[in-house]
Amino acid sequence: MKHLYTRLGWLLDALFPRSPSVAQFDRLPVQALGQCTDGVVAEHSYPCIAPLSYRSTLVREAVHASKYHGHARAAWLLGAAIAPTVADELSERQAFGEYLQPLVVPVPLHTSRLRERGFNQSARIALALADELELNYADQGKLLVRTKNTPSQAQQPDRKNRLRSMLGAFHADEAFVAEQYILLVDDVMTTGATLTSAREALLTAGARDVLCIAAAH
Image (cartoon, rainbow, N blue to C red; front, top):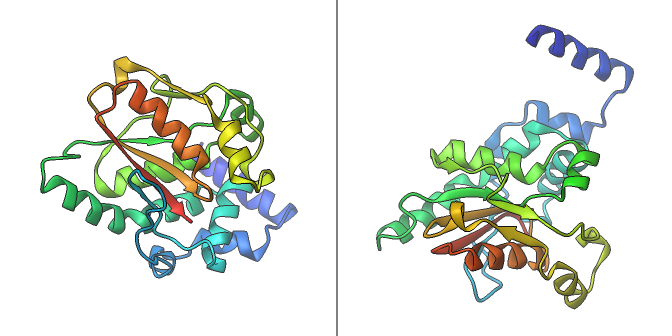
């Protein structure tokens, strides 16, 4: 069956060749993206890091490949590339007895958006990060759900409108969240409206603390 899918992939690529900007992530080494790291970003009153610079053409192409073309390896590369920065941040917190066994949780899509797209690129990034750091990955499932099908954040340049549209957009289940340290993962942070709303839902459900992580900013 695996060989069948591989051959089908080759056939689709032959019939519908992908652009070089997408195909490059088939074999790109993770170090190439890792070199686009420009440090920890903290733009909010709560903990939030976004290691990769979206100004980098390579990072931007990786995000687009994972989000708009469903390129699973591009998403994996993003998760693996930010792992060292996240590991350093966790090491500092663990020295004070925090985040010893954190749950890695992706920002979920609304069910209608997930059906339409067929995948959640943030979940793929989060799973790669969890694998690289050997952390517990919590598929959003019942733990964190998106209750509002909000407009694309890229279509709302005004931060106030983004924050307003994201109010009450998520719900977290106390049974899965209470007293947990959470690493909340998204693909890109712009205004932070999505991460803010999801973080508030997790804290309302009793999470001990939430460290927001975006692959790029």
